[in-house]
Length: 203
Image (cartoon, rainbow, N blue to C red):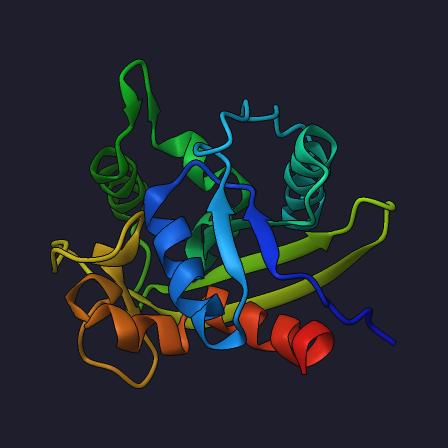
């Protein structure tokens, strides 16, 4: 039995403006106000785990301990089947540069590795998201979501973030980055995990 959330304010443990905006839209119908980690001047904890749930839990617990607010953290990434499900939990690491994250570089690297391997088409991939909702008393709930699709090249579209320009979800002929954000938010891996969170803690 999952624990019901009865608060009015939740801290989203992310410094990613795109993710925060997505979460604000998703929470709006439930009368819960959302505050981001950057707004609270929180440091980003070091993600030392090798799983999505492990890293999401690190971020959620650090945010709770720093603020006393219930916190929701997500860890997400893309798994490319022909690359042994890489980059997976290291998706953001593939984009790291000395000047911040460069996902065009990361997508180019991914494409180049697929070309080097002579990976056959369609090049299957999935986005995965794990949400951890943590309370100040130490309790947490975990919800996992995914969306399957194929990788396209060259990149297409201007909206979204991360690997969205090269990911075409199953059942669609456009990439996440070509979609209206509301449509993407309806079918995304984060939306899948979020629907389970709502059913479990807000339903």
